[in-house]
Length: 351
Image (tube, rainbow, N blue to C red):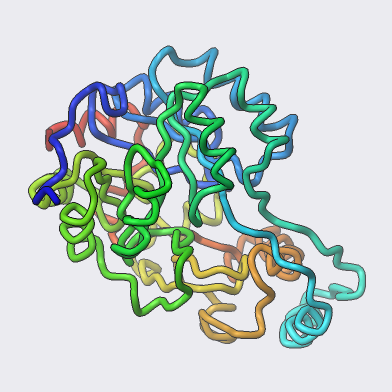
């Protein structure tokens, strides 16, 4: 096995810079991805929360907005069977909050929250032939991976352990995203639910670099040029940044979320399963403090989304993020309200 990944070359991602803007569902659309791609990085579109018509619209916007490479990201989870008993226990636990906001729990509809990549979605995406397609929570069925690669798309997958990186390589990815514990948003784990197995980025990265022969992309806690240089020194072929883009002008980050990110007093994050049922890192808020960031009663991903959605809506209407998934990583160093292109230009000093 090699001791380091091959150095970045334009033929890998086809971009001028080895810089990926992380796909961030709920806080961006095609506009951010277009700005990053046109500035020389790889812009990414999160697709797991988009209905078919919305996904088609966003893909068309990408095609119309840039002639540079871009990435479309999908989830590859297996949807769980509904568990009425667990759902009831969870809504009972949230009962005091429903009462506080005058919400009738019996009227809250169930909802899937997130959709995995399927043959039907592939039918929709195929005419657009995205240059890069990335997956979170493993990979879809082998025939779907083969279909995506048949379009000429490069396929990336997220790994939180060396074992996951090896699995991804064995199943045909063109690059592995080494997602460290510091990263904001959902953990990409798929071989084990044991969170103690997930190292920080700078510990995970060199181990994955040694373990696989495909290029490795570092993600988690990287927010400025110094962090990028450190990742490249440890063998990364590229870096992926998400939190750094949350306050960019092109991001759709909500006013409530932006206010929290602007205030250093709120820069305390934790991994929580309260909002979707799957561990994800976000800024600690009231419900995380009072219920505990990880609670075994929360329905399995993505079914937990439905129960907390009305609380989020009521609180946000009052200007509060007490019940919102305020996704963010541990490093807030580059958070500034500037254009995405300007941010990419600043970060390019690392290369």
